[in-house]
Length: 184
Image (tube, rainbow, N blue to C red; front, top):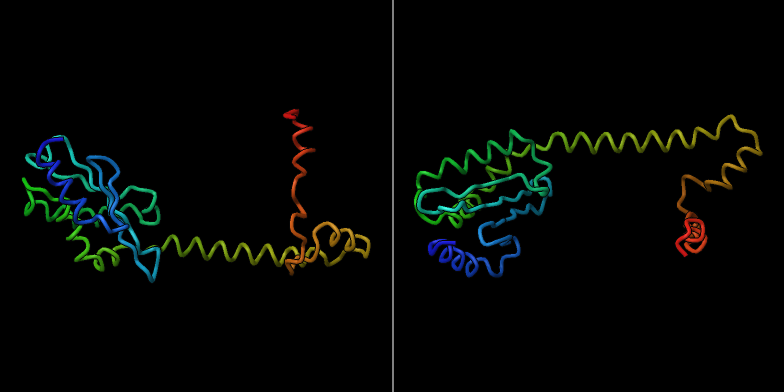
């Protein structure tokens, strides 16, 4: 780390010491999480990495590829990065990590509007439809059974509509399992 990076690191740590959304990953990597209280799918995190010659000749690298941003589509990430990179000329040759975080904070609503989350909503809808189909098929599977078949079905699975199974009804006996595997 050069002297400018050390100075910027000290400044950042003093500014964001009480901010739980700011994280220092290493000496040259910092993350800031922009949390949306109303909708978690509008939350995102930027990761700022300092190249070796930062800030004299290289700009900081901004990244949105963390797992926290997995709900954001690639073209939406690229639009967000382009908005940030459009400000680089104003900050060239100086410490820009605080400026990047501050710029995104000031324009956080614009960034959130870029996140559409259509695929996440569709996935949640598909999961709820699949769950409904599964419940209907389980109930309808008892139609056409004899009394004995129904009795064995309910003895094995219990009442599907209610969660009245005793705690641990499907637990594995640990001692028996270990004896079978030869670990004891």
